[in-house]
Image (cartoon, rainbow, N blue to C red; front, top):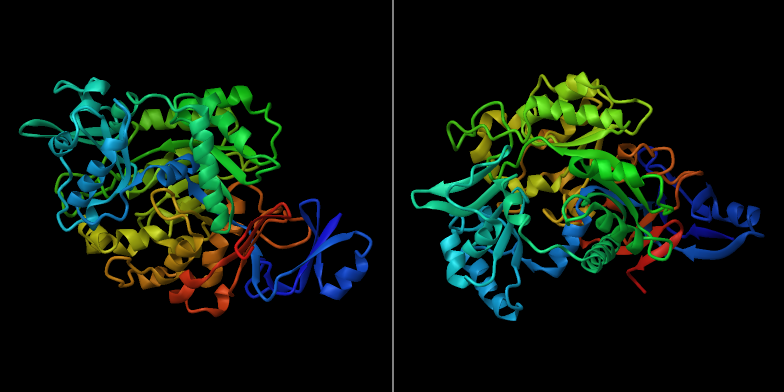
Length: 528
């Protein structure tokens, strides 16, 4: 039987300012839109339930196009270091937690960011050793491209003074040896020494994350988790066993190239409408915070350092070629302009099947004028994270220099060049709330000094909301069934207590999520 939704403003997101009076939903699909009385009369024999929005505002369901669901769940379950303002606060929090650990248990902290500290010096392993030499300690940086480990963790990982830097990574050393600071692929040296996660732990993290996503009005997420928890099958089945008809959420899982062969063995077996595989995920560079994003010119605050590629040109080409052999799109992390250029070149070398979902370049934070047209000619979308503007400015100016700012976080330029964009949070790196992302895309305001940066790159409210609706749908080739409120589209909705189009952007965070609806079912009710 069907359901009628009415009594508020309903934005279709088909074109700006387009609204409908009411919608009729049947079995998770929008069957019709129009005047409420007409729909009520036309479908009176089939309407089982009516939902009055009570003046609230309905949008197509918001989808986060780039996050890490399990990592977000872990952030909710672990020690969160994101809001600490000094290394002393971090160390004090560790001292508080250590006595509660079981013997030999790892102490793990998430999300430290030295750019928020008055003293930006990275914590040294010796400082962690003062806290514990019995418990291994691992603290992950907010960007997840760096970590700090104590001597016990390094001992368990087999790290010695002779341990060499891996391709695409760096072990930081000083005059006394290894400092405990590991960048990009070097992090795996420490992580491989950690005890394996149980499926039950992964299910708990997934459930915690999805419940939090729903509370924030999010109906789905494009996530990359399958290569990091010891066993592909265990992680995949944790998703299948957590997300299903009784706990619905649209989980679109990118597949890291390390486990893409495992994925090929199971991709036809799952009978779960809410969990699906996506593109093959590849990292091409690191992050700006740790100066590992790959630039075409030196970092302005570190002469001689352009960052680093994760793969050689030959290896990157081989990975994309492998994806094409599996008839898969690729989703490639590329932050620096040199990384973006390398990715464009390999996509040109191995063109995408245009019948498939598009390739992705994830982040593309630093561009050059000569790259936009080349990127536009590809069957590709750029996955952007608007909140990075708020987090990274003004300190990122020191890294890049004034000369590169015209092409830094260039969201408007991408759209002006008709390059499709989708919007995500990169949670747990940034906060999950899509209203933060929408606000950041419209205001481009720093969270640190509250100044705006790159006014010419500001998006309109319609463009910003589209990132999380039509943009996220296009990213997975489902733009004809998701992301709009039109007949034939999925009945996934985000209902807010206020109209984003009639508000000043500065007040967006006052908005409350009224309801989150997936396949016609209310999965979160903020006013229940």
